[in-house]
Amino acid sequence: MRKLVFGFVFFITLWSCKHGEGEYHGVIEKIEVEGQKYHGSSVSSEPYIEGTRTIEITEGAHTFLIPERKGQIKSYACIDCHSKPLNQMQTEGLQKAHWDIKLDHANENTMNCVTCHNPNNMNNLRSLTENDIDFNNSYNLCAQCHSKQFEDWKGGAHGKRIGGWAPPRASFTCVNCHNPHKPHFESRWPARFNTQKVQERE
Amino acid sequence: MGDKNKKWFSLNLNRKVSNETTCGCGKSSGGCGSHNSNPIPNTDSKIKSIGGERTKDGFEQVFDVKMDRRTAFKKLTASLLIGAGAVSTSCSMLTGDETKEKAQIDWEEQFKGNYKLMTDDEKKGTVDRLMRSYELRTGKKINMSSKNANEDVLFGYAFNISKCQGYMDCVNACVEENNQDRDSQMQYIRIHEMKDGRGLDFGEADDNYYHEVPAEGHFYMGTQCFHCDNPPCVEVCPVQATWREDDGLVVVDYDWCVGCRYCMAACPYDGRRFNWKKPEVPEAEINHNQHYLGNRMRKKGVMEKCTFCVQRSRAGKNPACVEACPTGARIFGNLLDPNSTIRWVLENKKVFRLKEDLGTEPKFWYFMD
Image (cartoon, rainbow over all chains, first blue to last red; front, side, top):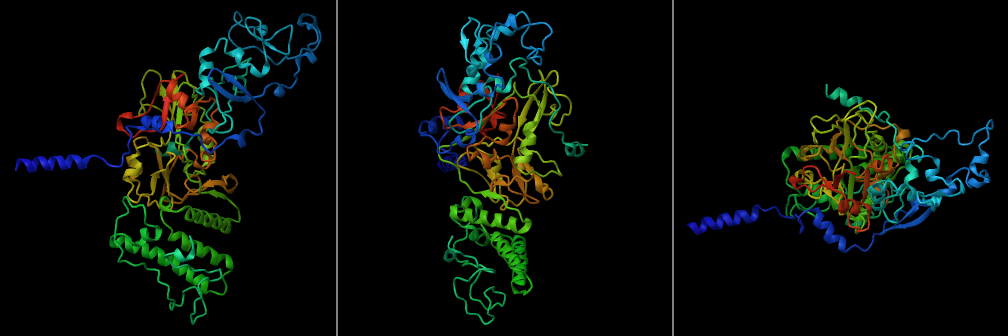
């Protein structure tokens, strides 16, 4: 009799286990195991980045595309106007160039125009140790202070992709989302308000 | 599917009949009743419930199942109505070719099977019919895809809580992309405004705020369908109208759904929505790039939900919400690709999921800077 009961309990336990769960304990294990068999997928986001002029960069272990910048700056090359050193160009009474730019980035003790711009060579940006940085690679300038964001951006946790999720990876660079002279995001009203939801919950 | 394999009787209202029928009435429609073709299948074949069934085609699923009297009558009535409509249009001398074609499409759509069990040809067939039907009804063309899951792809999503500012641009983009009902203002995405220091309290959170954002002392957290790897909504569906695709997307066949809303009750994340009325979208705002399992026009009484924009994601694009987000809080990608950005996030950031203890294995992770 006892055998029978044990047998019955054993049988029930065996059958009450849910079937068809698959061979993995959770999706993380599945990703790890099945990811090892990954040979690249046939999907490509190339058609969606065709319209954007990009350059390839390699930073640490990451190689990806970012939008080309110099072609997007309206008045590049800068030395077309900045033919003389800055102090010689600042004449009283003449109309100011770049009048619309007001620096709102860190405080005055930390930053002014020449923290990033090179007054002797306007065509390039300048690092804190006075090395030239190309406008196309302006993220190197930001990375001097924002090193944590830089790490996240390289990996893909900060910033946005261009095109789609599929390879090749193309990502916006810092200045595509942040205005370097005023990098914060403005507060604003939400894009949508659901009036129906209000009624339903009354 | 070739005509020879077809188990149901095709009306061929508007086409040349492939198998010559010699009928006294001179018509091939079957309206006279003296045709040989028999729409009722052989009922001797073994009767099985649909649960776990993967081999039965659509016709067998409709007819070759145990059903109670009420269901049987329901199905019969619906079929008879369509049949009667088809017959009356085919016999009438006044109706045009288009009406006959419409009736033919309605007939075939009525007897088609569960999308999940269709062969690629059958999928293409139904998509073609739906496109043609839309064209006949509205005079406008749509592009509907039946693209299957890509190999070596498992979709995953990450949401950065410290980046979201509550602008709701994602909600707007989602509504427009997925042809959601404008009248009832259905939305797949909810953005919850949570008080700092109060934990993730969804009861306290406000998901319908309207003030300048980000609000002082609050953070924002978005929820939508998490495309669980072990989805409870799929388990409870009595007709298998919802399932998990190979690329991890949990999808709904709107034509197979009976609208019982079990899945809605089973979902621990409030990820599913129900159409209480016929969804309406102004013609000018309809997104014509559609997928059978995605943003095609739904009908009254069926479930729908976020599909990670299957019409976009299977083509390599990001879902509309990811593309619309101005803060970069949303990251989407292939979990199986070791070099993908989503994998980097999972491996290098502190990520968590909602209600992980339920074992639903959502493929939607949250993280902070």
